Length: 95
Image (cartoon, rainbow, N blue to C red; front, side):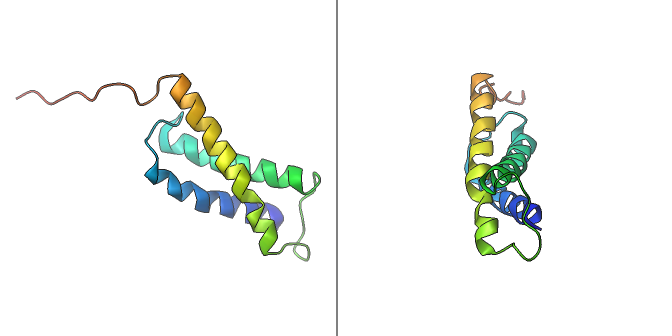
């Protein structure tokens, strides 16, 4: 149940990437994967490499996924910038 809470929080944080320039590695899908993997991995680490069950899952369990999602999106953004993602000029349609 804790893993579900972490992933749902990662999904919620991912929705805010629409306010960032699209420079993530893999675009919006890369940011999505970074948020989900980051939130699940961070929550797993912070809870002592165990997944809390239904009785141990509380609101704070879900909030543990926020830093991981931000870190995951940040890593995907840094990879995208280093690879030059989003720097290509947009072709103007010729008339």
